[in-house]
Length: 185
Image (cartoon, rainbow, N blue to C red):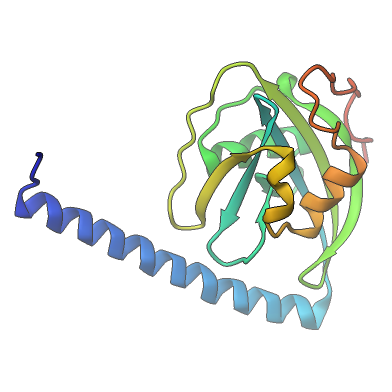
């Protein structure tokens, strides 16, 4: 039986405490930004990526939300949607993708937390198992879920929209349509 030293246990405990503090900070910041969004009803521009591996979809859980989502987030000013998608996936789950791996599904407008969000959806089907790394601060869980089990997970409106509009019935033989990308503005 392996026994860790008191120093290792203390370091692990301190790391866990740091992560819990970060999670609380994210929750507080999220509450504050939701108040701002409620008052000003802004428009957003984001990207989400459906990552499929062995006929299972990757879902992420942010510490400040109750529902699971697809990896993704907001676009920076002037940032192309495809580049934002690659950046957000790397930030949230540590998976390195190349822009040409992403298949553009389409753009939908949804309303979440008082924001009218124009979200570009991409998907990728991986042939090898990805190494997922989450920070335990903003993203607290990430898992691949079989389509039959998706109903057991509360999903954000954007994740539900992807499954309804673009989901390919999770057939691993189904090929994502090859679209040139979102329209240029």
